[in-house]
Length: 319
Image 1 (spheres, rainbow, N blue to C red):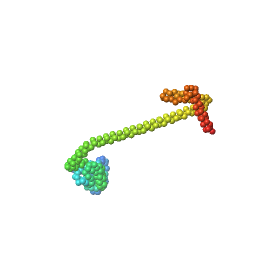
Image 2: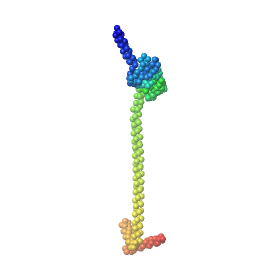
Image 3: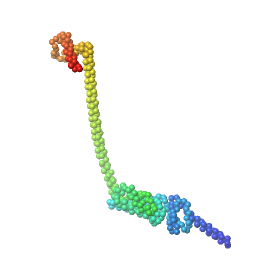
């Protein structure tokens, strides 16, 4: 009988130890946080890994996941600024950042952020016209996130982003929008060829203008080059003539130079009269033309006279 009582006591003690150990040791998974209450009051937050609590005194009151949670918000009908009904459906992404506030800040933070997202969405859409709601999705998303994030600080929740999944206007509005799109496409189909012809004419006119300008610039440059060439030629001729005259003057002043000049003048004199005889029917000649020596003597006399005059001029200008 004593052995039987001992065995019963031993089994009871073992079972009590197992229960005690089970209640004492808590293993928290990764990306989780457990809130512990001691005698009904907040005590601590258990972090991932092995944790020990006091059985029957401490208890795990709340378990929170610290992962990013997608929350599908129910679709709702919003009234735009131009009094058009618009069905909006979206999804909210949030994360628990403070397990204590998430446990005691509100009775249900999921319902709280869902309701706040819906009311904020109605407010934002109500300030926009229907066309703007389709264009300003990013603005709507940011406005909802900002409004919820400010209120969710006391709930221990961080709202990461809000995304609109669908914007559905009434069927009548959809039909009208489709008709408008069709009309715009038909208008573009009519306007596009005329715009193309207009651009073609503009391009042709611009090309002709540029061609005319290029041609005039070319002609201008050609005239400039021609004038510069003529000026250079005239200058070269003048320089050659001046050089020839200088050489003749030097040759005239040299010994025997005057005789050479007289001979050259006589030759030119005879050549001139011969040319006149060939080209014209009437010729005026001196009375003593029959005597060629007299003609040459006359020419030489004229050259000598000219040379004397030049010599006098040189004497007058000699310092």
